[in-house]
Length: 188
Image (spheres, rainbow, N blue to C red):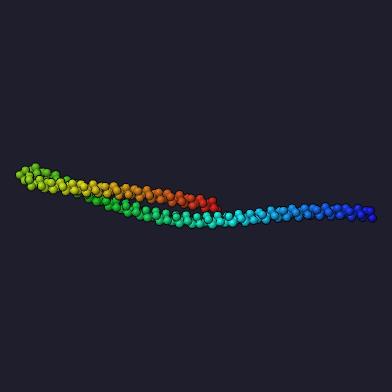
């Protein structure tokens, strides 16, 4: 009987030890469950923040795409303007050449008039009037040529400015595209 009491005592002590061990394991599991629940809540919050960031980034990408399209439209418009300016420049060059030919022709006529004055001294008074008239026409033509040259220079300056604007817009577009590509790469 003593042996069975000792065995029972040992069994109870073993059961108490196992019970305490199980209670300790349950407490640890509850603590681990608490930590896991908190981590899950934190993960849910982080996930929501990421989803919000993704929505913001998608909105930003859409805005940048719209801006890029607008820049493309502006660049196309600038290219058309540059082509029109180039066409105007070519037209003005033709007008300038015609004016130059007219000026040379007027100079030839003036030289002829001078020869006539030298050979026809008797009709000097009438030829002087013609000469003044021709010189006035020459001055008018030279003024027109100067005006045409000024206009040509202005058109050339506008064409250069337009070309620079188009180059600047192309550079900005390229930078935006690189920037957008960089953001897509970061997002992925």
